[in-house]
Length: 150
Image (cartoon, rainbow, N blue to C red):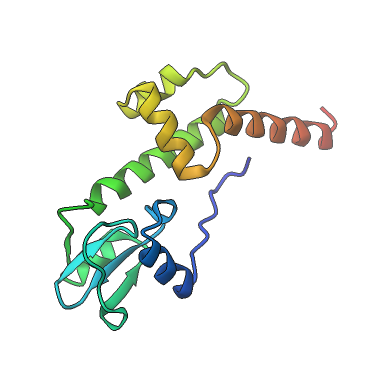
């Protein structure tokens, strides 16, 4: 695929909508802080909704921590952000080894997860299965080889 993963940041309207809908698809994309409580959460957090004027948006949990906010004990945003970064490492591994036979079990072991849990986490994070991602990476490598005349 590409050497660098491109991060697409949602607009403020999208982020507010994701929080209102408690949309899990945005977990790992950003966290939001509630000024009045001093807590930051994931968009899907089941905690009571905060007033819109009390929200602050952060694209990384470390920025919320730097502003003196603490992680929510219900949604545990630090755990989710750590999982997302580990999944990104797996994506890079898949891209680097796309031509090899990569099994779900081996990829899951790299994440210290069961194969079913890993499959679900990967698909939730990237919208495709690990196999589909590997196939796309393999196809991209094939196209590059054709363009270079190999």
